[in-house]
Amino acid sequence: MRPEILNSGYRPGTKLLFTLVRVFSGRPLPDAAKLVFYRPDFYGGPAKTFTHEAMRGPSQWSVGDRELMAAVVSQANDCAFCVGAHTATAEQAYRDAPKVRAVLTDLDSAPIGDGLRATLRMLTKLTRQGTVSANDMRQVLAAGVSRRQVEDALAVCAAFNVTNRLADAFDFERLTPDGYAAGARFLLKRGYR
Image (tube, rainbow, N blue to C red):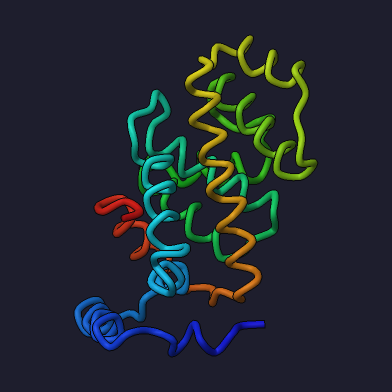
């Protein structure tokens, strides 16, 4: 159930910003962006910093890889808003929509490297079961993934397990395909700040 405060509980300067975004973009600010402006000292600021570092900080994973991880984690959580947002962003980052769709349809036959496939399997298991074993990690490392890459993937997983739950708890409004595409362009240009 969507709390009304997420529609109206903002300071006048923030409301003005939302109006400017709507005027210049022709679209309302998505609920994910609105949430970080509500009580920014409690949730918004720390969440933006953590998510931006996970998704855009230095990593051996590409931006497309990390956006795909976000989409896969969101799919494991059945979070429709985030699946749409991060599928669109991964498609634009890779410039390869069929590749992204293939991963989300059938990970085993998708045209991706073994390391990414093993990592996505591990993230799916961690998201669904809340745990992974030492053997799961050995399989990821054996596929050529570095320890640092594992840490980076786990940061993406953590960020989106939180975001997915908030999106569902606050009933984030799903966007049109054009709305997701516009959001993806913004995320690729500006990141999560």
